[in-house]
Image: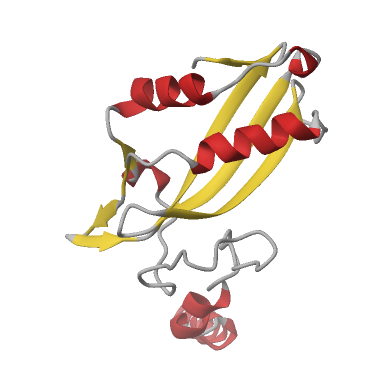
Length: 166
């Protein structure tokens, strides 16, 4: 009997201390990884189809022709300049593909070969962002039968100022 009462007391304590599920579900809403509109960076004409449900399932966003086509499109648009040669590292670019296959809200981080924040020639940074924004063969995400907005990452590796294929 004592074990039963002890179990009931512990069970009640756990229930009382636990937050309701409805509160837990909203705790992280719009806080983990959402990219808010920034008038200094973003195109005012880019619209999300449903800003309350932007997926973080980047694997659901496809590029027409797959990874090889994406690499070929990036490399064909890239204009190497000798002043880029000193850069070895990565461009991590995050953006949204909306349900109309349009892209926006681009954010970029530049890392060295040890994955530490670094700088590169400003012209290279601008060029990489420009050619990434120019990619138009995105297929938006479908989730549970519905067209969705979705985040996507691109990681561009560079050695001696040239794009390296994956």
